[in-house]
Amino acid sequence: MNHSTRELLNRPGPFLLIPDTVLLPEGPADGYAVVVADGSFHAVGPSEELRRTHPRLEGIRLPGHLLMPGFVDAHHHLTQSFGSALAFGEPSEIYRRVWVPLETALDEESAYTAAKLAAFEALRGGFTTVADAGTRADVDVDVVASAARDAGIRCVLGLVCNDAEDVATDAEDADPAVLDHADKHLARYADDPLVHPSLAVSVPEAARSATLRRVARLAAEAGATLQIHVNEHLAGVERSLLRHGLRPLEHLHHIGALGPHLLAAHATLLTPHELTLLAETGTAVSYNPVASAWKGNAVAPALAMAERGIRFGLGTDGTRGDGFRLAEAAEFAQRIAYGLATGDSSCGAGWTWLEHATRGGADAVGLRARTGAIAEGLAADFLVVDVTNPELALSWDVPWELVRRGNRDQITAVFVGGRMRLWRGLPTTWDGPALVRRAAELARLCVERAPLTRAHPTSTAARERSTAA
Image 1: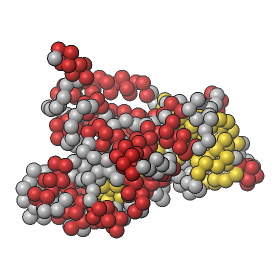
Image 2 (image 1 turned 180 degrees about the horizontal axis):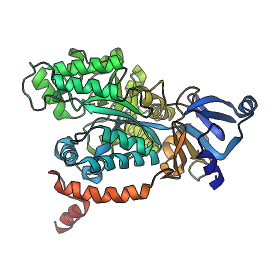
Image 3 (image 1 turned 45 degrees about the horizontal axis):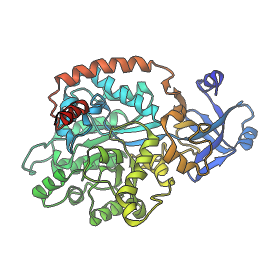
Image 4 (image 1 turned 30 degrees about the vertical axis):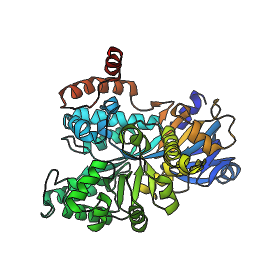
């Protein structure tokens, strides 16, 4: 597509977009088109039919392109983007040694810049929605909301509601100040077009049982999600057993916190009983395969979840913002962890991971009625993907090709809420390279003053040690 097509797409709309193929919930459809108006899909159907029913709209042809839903990142930490390679080669529970110290070193400008940088990377990778699990930076959470809005990404914005970290007893009532803050957060963004309020507790042990119960109720009543890291690391499971005699997910069930409002992050260490609890309560999970590979103890049994009808989306955990590579990692991790041992060469047949990277992810973060699919009435959050490249041009199976051979370089345009946000990897309304330069400056300052503790040296230092030995 040329510059004139870009200019047409950069207008307010309405649009009649005619690509070669549209990726619908049931699969790819050739000869289809979409009408985008007022930020939503006004119509989806055969192109000739839409041209006939919308004669006043000049069709914008997108030859050699696929129109597909934007990816949904079901688990992110937007203000941790300055950490980046600090997580490489590190063992589990690095949040205690790297992420919390780094976030507490952020001021308002650096928190905004870090969040916008993460949003920029996400958009470049085809994510139109991210679920932020809450920041520990000592700033108003609206700083993160502003960064998401300014970047142009849809954001499920968590507010951390911890009130019992390192507290040995669990007898106290919920902290009234925490509950009041949570209630105001839910009201603050109730009508925001891009920012959707959510509550968060870092891990179950970070909040009193009464607080967990109350914030779960607040989220459920508001139709919002409560995000909690659950059953991610062995150490966390063991601490819960020692404190409550129950595993973290079992403890949440015991106090009545499980349900459709809860988004359990990671959930890598699950017993058959816990899978049953997830299925019976309608609790959602964010399956984060890259995080498992980089610093986890296990891979979540996502295929077992799919078989049992457990709701789940795919999350990056802030590792790398490429939706195609995330879908590939989701399938790859299942094949390595489970498929090889059982002779399952399909491991979800490709479509499973596209489904949970888009519509399933939207459901997991509480936005199924808002986004996640190319369907009439949903927000026009979508990607225009070039399928003329060597990786995709000879496809015999589009869903499998997108999972195994797709990548961010094939994305021509990214739309959120009916507006073009990126064209060939760069923002259309703000200066992306300038943001990256400023982020690099601030990141150096923040990392220098943060009290970080790493278990391993950099790769260069490790090589030097190995060579010396």
